[in-house]
Length: 134
Image 1 (cartoon, one colour):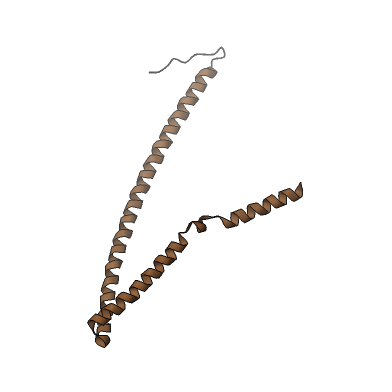
Image 2 (tube, rainbow, N blue to C red):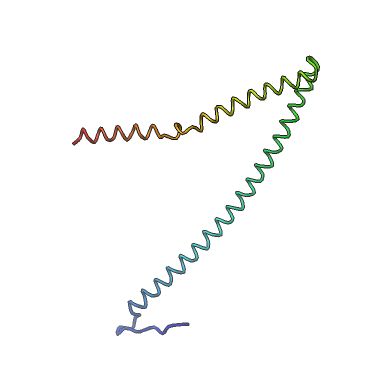
């Protein structure tokens, strides 16, 4: 519904009308920009989901390939030490590697690694410098 424009004595539109138009235009612009942002975020989310699915599928295939290669290693070792000992040797070596990775990961995840030491050190230096300046 169109509002009639009020005329000012000099024939132009009133400041109230101009401000009203400005607010309406800005509101429309913000709404349009919001719709654009939502559309872009949905598109980016879909792209990321496809990427995550591809990474998961690739990881599964790599795991299967690793299992096949481990079995091949067992078969090769079986020629020298017998099938049972070959499986034991490969299992123990992989177990040790896995245990070392877990221990290293636990160490890296410890709460002590979350302390921002460089930032604390820099802040202490800044505070000392500020005290010296006073």
